[in-house]
Image 1 (cartoon, one colour):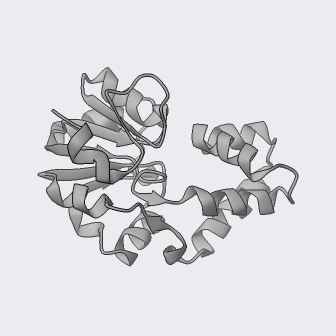
Image 2 (cartoon, rainbow, N blue to C red; image 1 turned 180 degrees about the horizontal axis):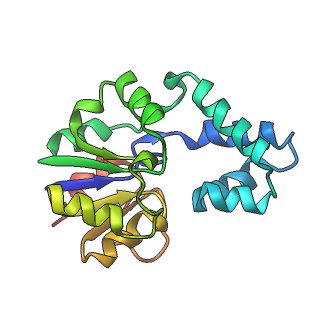
Amino acid sequence: MNILWDFDGTILDTYPVYTKLFRHVLQNRASEKEILAKLKISFSEAFTYYHMTEKEIETFRGLIRAHPADGFRPFPDIEKVLAAADKNVIMTHNNRIDLVRALRRYGLEHYFAEMVTEENGFPRKPDPSSYSYLDQRHGFDLAIGDRLLDIIPAKKLGKKTCLFQNHQPGADFYLDSYDQFFDQVRL
């Protein structure tokens, strides 16, 4: 089985750190719960909702880059799923430097045949262009993400989808933890 992965909130648990940093930039004007809900839709949604200035957005992104990679933890049992796949690829709106830094920190980089990031210039999800590119180059059977935004492009290509720690309608499979993967996901 070949798997296309989202990164943030799917492979590494990045949202607790992102939420704290975002709240810091907002000078505590919103609760972490409210911020997390907006970030889980998309960063763009959160930036717009909180009327963030370009300077605030730049500050937030700078704080993420300055944060130690070991602050972002892999989800338990993720490595078992990565190792069992025939091929893994990533499509993320994250930048390559931060992505590779975090994956290397946990020895996960070698599991991925290709990583498409913001630097590749594809339109943002849910546009399927990046997924189509990865499918043509590597073929994938399943897309895993933590937001609907991550699975919509795969659905447009007729692929199976899995939402991680998210039970919004629309996915073929749902996982709350990766120890359930082999019991829940059947292709």
